[in-house]
Length: 131
Image (tube, rainbow, N blue to C red; front, side, top):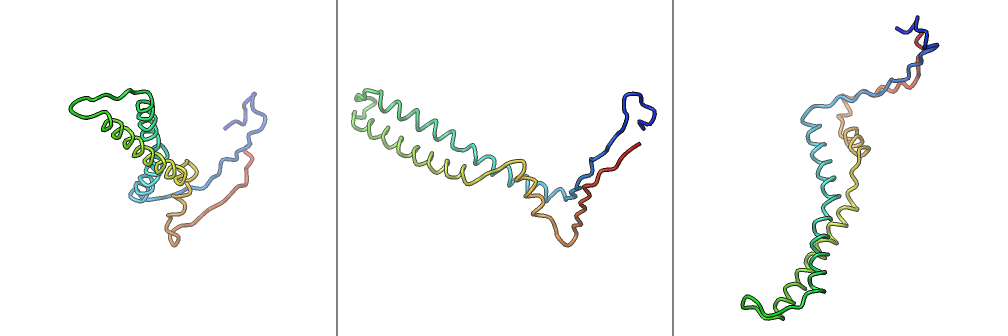
């Protein structure tokens, strides 16, 4: 291939790797589980944003009687909304911390879900010299 190339003195190939063979349904299942983990990592953003917005509104607003509701009812509504979104935020943060999804974990999930009786692993890490 590169035998008479004036720019290449020696070509060393070290590209052997493991080949993973998996059925489509297994891959779809593993990928779906991985996406669910990945979604849970980002699920804290919405409740945190709502919690922050409601807290700012609660602290900066001067509540008045409006729409047939008294000032104290509006204050209670905003305070309870803040507490609800705070609890939601805390739960979402804990779920995000407990669900670590990454490319490495996706590959590990594929490898851990293989059918051991039909799986033959080939590990060849030697390099070959191509002249």
